[in-house]
Image 1 (cartoon, rainbow, N blue to C red):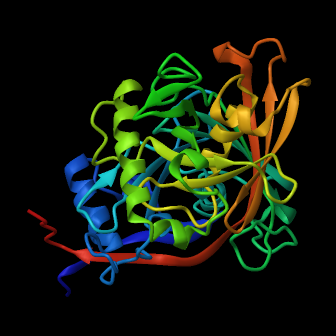
Image 2: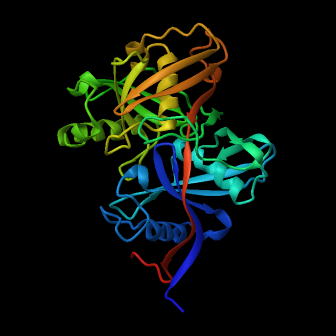
Image 3: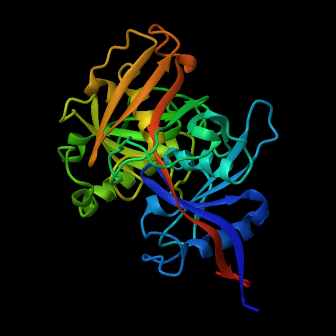
Length: 367
């Protein structure tokens, strides 16, 4: 006998993030109990997360809750939870695009989806944002493979490429493409763009925050005055976006943009929101890529993109390399319309690290 309980779980890398994946049926259904359970699993609150599965950073403190979907034309429901490292908080508002690359393989390995010969396409609903994602997963001999020759910046080695095509991604949180109603909104004397595509983001020109925009994430995370200014602008922007007080929430995210350094479309330093991402979020990539195509946004002014076709590749440079995003649009003349964006496509890789049981105390109490 033991005073701990074991729950079936997998520990996986998805893109440039890492987290714990569960079958929904194995978890508490009541939200307060679920929150306490996830905090215990990840070892929060603790800056080291020494007593749990968390990796002491926001990109390694993630949870994916997966289940078969009851919706027509949808295969899998994916509910994401961002577990705070140093606070007893679990944010169920955002989604995570990087971890999506692990959701499909997990669903197949758990028997929720039957793999097909060569490739398996899975339609996934992001429960958090109501967006739809088509995951195109290589399944030779009807089996999941993780090894391959495809490389993504921020992950050592290579892996099997998984194409994630994000659909129905406009206004998932606020209901609007431009939540403030304009491509430019002035806050604290700074011009920002507030856009809600895959992930609501407040974007600004890096030079307006007294940085070049090509700094490392470590340099930016050590710049406390910069982080304080970002948070002040983010909180005020959220009010204008109709999101209320977000002081204890991780959305909207924040991005400082600048001209590309290595032949890409634009450079981004992405904040999650209180620390700079070492690479870049997939959903954040979608949002900034779309912003490059929307006339008069901060991103558009920097990238100087003039969309002339129904498909456009945006190359977003980040601290450890770059990430490509294929944006499909309805037409070049519909720039101001909500239906302008049809989908965004990104290639990611994933890897199963552990599959077994995760243990938590029987009596979980953080009160």
